[in-house]
Every structure is written in C-alpha cells, then in structure tokens.
Image (cartoon, rainbow, N blue to C red):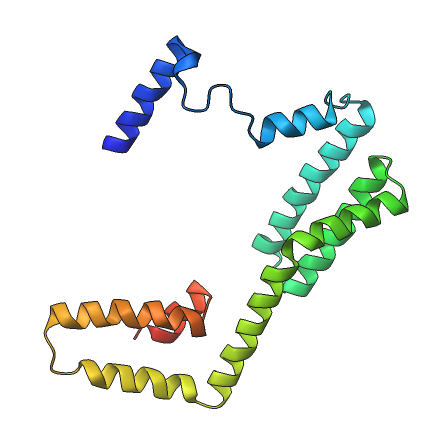
Length: 178
C-alpha cells in the first residue's frame, strides 16, 4: 500500500512538473530506438489486415486450446509458426525478411531454451532412476521431530536448492507437495 501511494504521489508530482522526474533528460531504450528508426511506419490497409489476422489467429488459438483440447506443445508451436508465416505474407514481407525475422527471434530465446531443455533432461534422469524420490525421502526424514520454525527454514532452504534440479515451478509443486 505504501509503495502504491508513493508511486501515485510521484506520478502527480511529475505531471505537474516533468523536470522533477528521475529520468528527465535521460535517453532510454525507447528514445534510442525511435531515433534510430526515425518515424513510425504508416498504418496502411495491408498492416491493418495483418494485425486483424494476428488477433484472429490468437482468438482461434485460445479456442483450440480451451475447447478443442489442443494442449500439445508441438501442435501449438506448429500453429504459431504457420500463423506467423501467413501474417508476414499478408504484411507483404518476402521469404528472406520472414527468415531473417525468424532467426532474430530465435537468437533471443536460444540460450534459455537450451537451459530449460537440459534441465528437463536432468529431471528425466532423476525421475527414471528414482533418485528424485530418494532425495525427497531423505529430506523429509531429516525434518522429523524438529520444531516447526526450524522445519520451515529447512524447507525454504531445500526448495532453494531444489530449484537447481527442477527449474519448473509446476514440476516442483507436483514433485514436492504431499
């Protein structure tokens, strides 16, 4: 509540006098991007059609996931790639521009994807070898007969360390909750 109140007071003060802003005269990412690209592109009928198609594509995706049980990650990924190709074609981009945009997008998620994939592999090995169950059994047995405060601290420490073995919050909850 205090932080929200402070933020509202700060906003009112900046509205009255923008020179009192902490970042007044600072060039942030938005300023440098706008300066590098110049003026925003014109919102033509082709771009409006591409935007409408993009929105419609996401509405269809939500329908497919919610009502047609399309929960396979591979199917959703294939749908999104096909949708991006159609939207880019309607927007007037050529094959090279589409490929360049795809490569640029993949570059930003490549390393996190590899980390998640490797963590999934480690989790699979731990599960298949019943090592994960042994770790959890050992951790629970260590806490038997201890005070609730000490147990809470140790559970917190265990979850902190367990993050390295199982990075997914959902997988952690499914694995460690009784």
